[in-house]
Image (cartoon, rainbow, N blue to C red; front, side, top):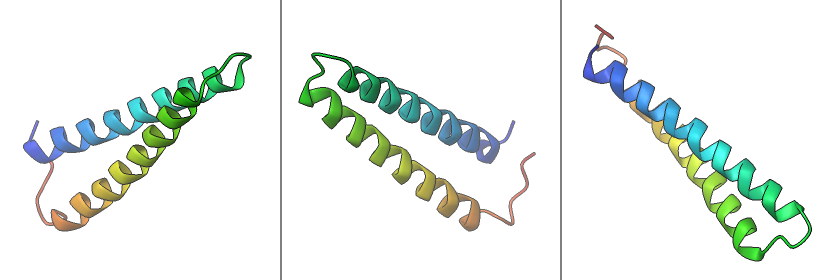
Length: 69
């Protein structure tokens, strides 16, 4: 596995992890007794997922001429 392929796998897994964590924090906030910390963590996590997605697109455009092998 090349460094480019590993990087793409790592970015995708990071996006999924931050989306999952953000969803979990949001569901904790929606429950009775949910705190503002849960909402803040959900917002920060979802913003991080958006940032990782933008970085992933930038990375793919920058290295489009390099093979995955």
